[in-house]
Image 1 (cartoon, one colour):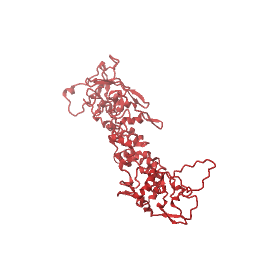
Image 2 (cartoon, rainbow, N blue to C red):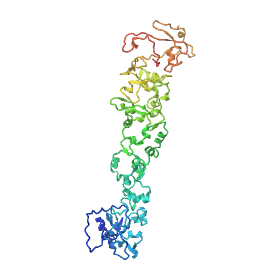
Image 3 (spheres, rainbow, N blue to C red):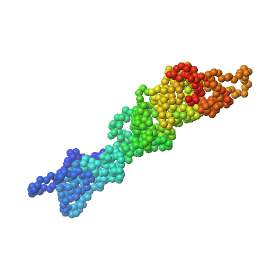
Length: 579
């Protein structure tokens, strides 16, 4: 705070508050000035940015003493009064308030007092024991910042704004040059928007601390934060954790590019998953980075998501994503189709249920292993992604009563399809991973083979079961309450235990072929060879001897749908074998 001595109030304060624009003064001339030969328009007074302390004169200096109130004329020191606001002594032509002759004949002057005391003789600066005091003030270097004659406002700054003046001491590289992003106050030279000029209770002479410093100007952000239930932790403390207060080479004056800023300082786990991932998510690594999906200040959703995760993902995945002219990720627009059946994570709006959204070692950014082919020899580890939610016994148990609805009586048809030594059907053979028009996200068709032929499934549900008519097999049905047995039971293996057989069993002769039946050697049957050497498609061992397997004639109960009546004899299916 600056106090003026009482005797100076009349001289200094009135002219300052009036903000007088003083015209150049000329000494009295007894002779009238002749009229100009041509009309002239006087040039406007220049807006001096950094005026010299003593303006150059147009005439030779006098060799005798002259009255101090005649120092400033059109010819002598004309620039002294070319300011919008004049210092009080200058306004009333009291140059002797600060100056005195040191050599009259040489027309030389000196200050009446030491520079440290010259200003404080009138202007009493009170620091009020503030913990932080500007160094020029401590050293009495008032004229390092202020022009003693005048300025553009009451502060009498040496430059039109703080900026050009402050960088003379604080930064020789000038924040306005060479930076992609410059903070508004810095761009306009308004250092005083954030810093006190003389003293402060805060470090670096700041007017406020923490986020209060920024929200003093960013009023709209302040209002938004008040309404946001979830706030980014740095916003609660200090904006300067993420933003440079002056200038930077990054958007929105941030201290680094988004990924490095977020993952390099706080979110180390994210940085690790992105940097070390075999497959990287372009939304994270390319322009915008984390801000493509997250709001940096606060919001209404967990993890500061800009919208529900499904909606955020669809900003990019609403169209096929190509790389090098090849479609590598198809569009998934049907995720938001009303009325369809959605996979659990999709229904919950969480793509992160199956995908590592920052980066992954599995293709398609999947969180764990998932079969990519139509056929695959069964290996429980290959289905880790599915078994993270679904019970793995669904494909491990041949007989179940509640574990799955896909069963004929208690026969587990998931086990029949998947748990096979060679050509087990993978999940994608029947199910869409995102959404479908059918219950249990059953597909209409599935790409099959290298030609991408759409193999139809033709799934039709019933209250207690259903049927399929695929390109793999004829129409097959199942029913949980009344087994259809379209998938014929596996013949019982020959008892090879060392126990002695029962007498009636030992005496029983081998059955002969009956009319309408044929005998087949189970060890050489083509069906057996297709299901695996010495092993059925369900994993059960077939007899190692030349046991005969009966193939009954197809009865009306097992007739093909839509044909009705008797059908010609056809070989029965070994459960789980290919058609």
